[in-house]
Amino acid sequence: MASTPPHHPTYNVRLDEADISDIIHLVDPSRTVLSVEQLESGRSFNNRIYFIRVTPSDDSNDATADIEDFVLKVSGQFFGPDKVQNEVACLHLIEHHCPPVPVPRVVAWCEGGKSALKVLTRFEDGQSNILTRSADTDAKRGWLLLSRVPGRPLETTDLDDKENGREIMQQLASIVTQLRTKIPTADRFGNIAISGLEQHRGSLHASLEVKGLILRHLIPDRPILTALEYYHIRLQDQLQKLETEPALTLLREKIAARVRHFTSHSLPTLPQSASKPTFTHYDFSPRNVLVSDCSPARVTGLVDFEFAGFFPAEEDFANTAVNNEGDWPADAYEWFLEGLEAYGVETPLRGFSEERWRGGE
Image (cartoon, rainbow, N blue to C red; front, top):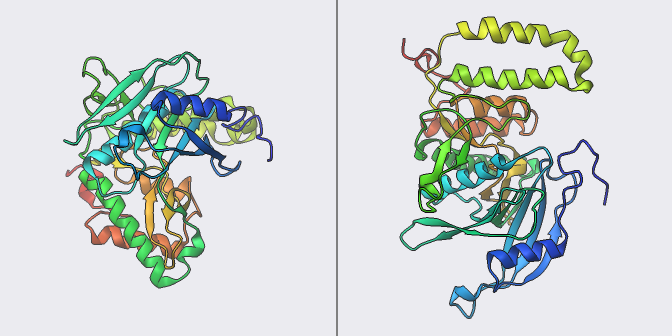
């Protein structure tokens, strides 16, 4: 297996089978690990991923219960507890508001350091609660234990056949529409934190709070109430990166002053957008879409919500065009946008309404 470069988030981030067995035992002492498979290097940038097969739980009350498969995501070296909390919160919101949407279910998590392990329990009335269990060891990195969604990552070749490709993108349009419309908008922009668990008696739903952004170089010091404030903080974070990383010296000399001027002088004068904080995946790419092995392939899941949150409604499209540029074949992404438009979601395909951009002025 190729070694991981020191600058990579997963450098020196790994667990052995004994560590993984200890985690499973803490979550459910009646289970036994049958096998552990690590996702090959290069397939996940921000996390070390393990696929775990375990025996059925003694609590299943089903003599014919099947062996279960889980995914263990261990956070990379540059991330703190906020990334783990955010993915737990986002997956919970989807499970609560969009039950038909195929995403992983949270089983347990640890935020790293000496923080306690937390196990999410679900009840027949649809409510869920968090059980906290102490761990004797120091978890160097935060981790998240999830149910494994069936399927394989979507390949762009799955979209080559026009009829099948359109069907896949239509299914994705339906999923994304549910996320954008069924999860209520928030009163501020940002990622989601879990706070006040004791105050809320272990209720995960009552403990969610939209709070700040998961950024590498800047910590927002106030709630983000408008789209312009959101974009200002995003630019400030990238400017901080530009001004501090040695590898960006040449680029810094060319554009840093321009970015500073735009952020401090031009951006504040732009018309205020009426865009509401909308639930957004923020990494919509084929690698995060799972499909069946049968032909024609069908969507079986959407994964990787670690940077999801409540952002301006147009942000997911912008992120796909910039940070995920080239991930989607142009015609396939247009089919996706057409599907969203058919469900009443505004997209760049036909443009956003003037009311959205100018706040109804």
